[in-house]
Length: 70
Image (cartoon, rainbow, N blue to C red; front, side, top):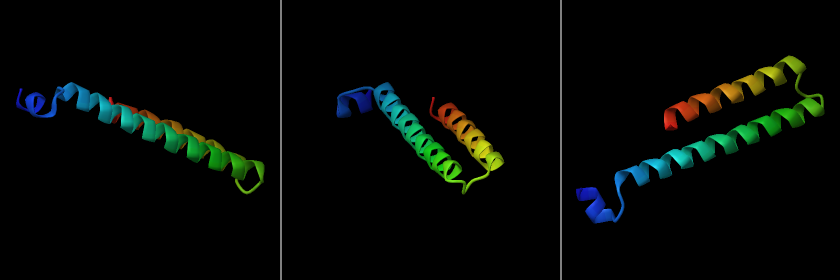
């Protein structure tokens, strides 16, 4: 009650805002990592197995981030 009276909104709103921000940051990071790995793979600087492992790591980390934030 004290936080809501002082801030003008309840604590669930803050939680949703922080969780949404964290999920957006995780998605933006995953997009950056996947695009960087893809560009390296297309130019031949990254091997097939390393590209596949990088994509797997990105997916795994996004799942972990979502589990932490939501």
